[in-house]
Length: 459
Image 1 (cartoon, rainbow, N blue to C red):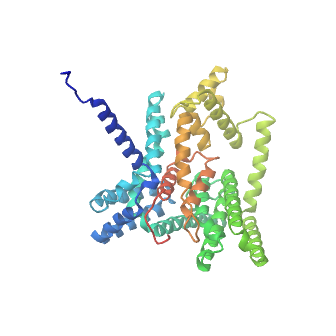
Image 2 (image 1 turned 90 degrees about the vertical axis):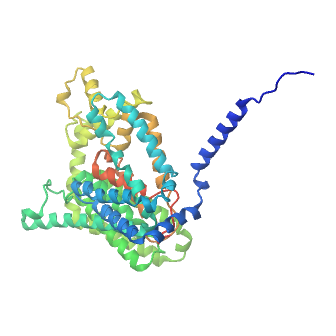
Image 3 (image 1 turned 180 degrees about the horizontal axis):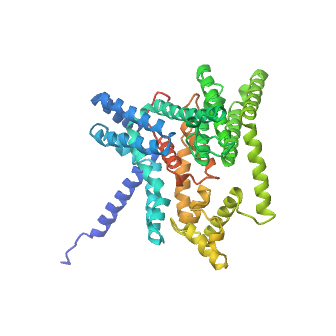
């Protein structure tokens, strides 16, 4: 009989613990594993403990959302009270917080931040690199808004109100220009009225604002009073977009309306059969929108279209890229070349302009003779050029989960998702992550479109 001592091999146990830990981690990040009733109880609990502090948090969140549509200084300052309140209220809201860190938007934003942070190592200029990834500083909005996400109707209302106030700044400029009252106007080029926004930034911001109203305006199940409000908001916003003179925003707005209208017609195809009155009403509304836009902004549209044709001719026939349109085309082309040459890592955050200058020098072209911008005038091309394929994948997944938060219903239920879609469409012509206002709005709309949310008044 063998006297060999039998000892337990610890390796299987270690593997078992590792496997159990990995399984627990995967379950933690599975959206379908989130107990929605438990999530709802955490929100109800904070109301029961201290309703007054919850209302203060909501009021400061609404103030921040309204301030997003203000001048840059207002946008920056409006977030401070919200941030402070969110930290102070952790004593009451901490039970809700684990659920935001199980959301794909929050986790993917963290991965994108990590990838961009690693890209800083390759930067020629740390200051420029930090500017390139500065949009991530608005990620704090996601956890800060989370404890009041069960009051989303109020949050969306505050966002709409802020944009309406921004439209008032455009009205102020129009009246000041017509009556020669300088203090009512903003420093803008002729035929461009973007109020207190920069024209390009204003165009992108207002394209997102247009998305807030479209679902309620096109959905026939929306309550009549709400639908009238939505149609009015849509018309005012559309006029504001065309008044900015920003051609990229025009195209993005037209694309957004086309997509939402097509989706609405498809979903209502059975109910519209045999109801010509609804079809005629829709056609009349479309005709009224076109007529109103042309009557109020026709001169701006005509002027900008003629400028575009002239600048495109100079770019493609005369190889002259010194115009506004020509320089944007050139920046797009350089970004595409940077991605082709560096598809995995990109050229690095903050390195886009230096890389273009190096390429010109390699061709014996003096960079000072070219108009070289800090970004590619396209959110997607700039991201591809600077952070490569992994950065694009992370950003694409963030957008996917952000837009996934759409569901059947009437009213403003899908307003944040369509606003996000509008901003992303504008991003094809504007580097929305490079500006404080558009990047703040981007993160806020992502915050309002989490995969799993508590029950709110709007469903």
